[in-house]
Image (tube, rainbow, N blue to C red; front, side, top):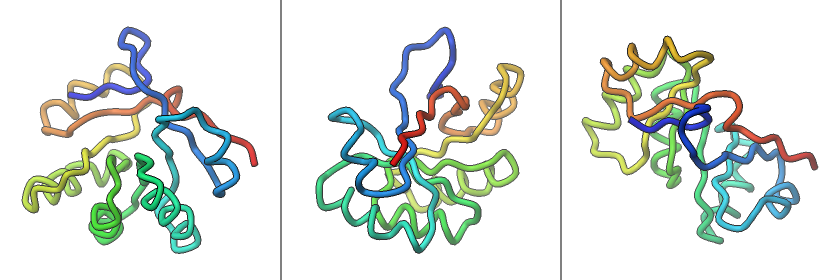
Length: 130
């Protein structure tokens, strides 16, 4: 199971951006984090064309399908959608890993038992100002 932002485990950070200018302010080799939304398609296209890894926060199965087709490395979901999106990822052998937002260590066991690829704490997401 992948753990991002846990105080015991060193992990990469995700850089939350709102435009291409913010992407340019991130460290080289960063994983970019943004919400899946039609207004973010220009940023996603920029990331694809520059071979930049990215995580997309998705709110539905349909958005997860789009995000995977767009080449997201991670599909970030809330705890309600986690199991459904993980089943989709396994059924279609998606390359993207499913991460669920969590707030505390007590949630790890539940998602490990459900077979979720990983969890992400709020501290793993760094907001990049524009």
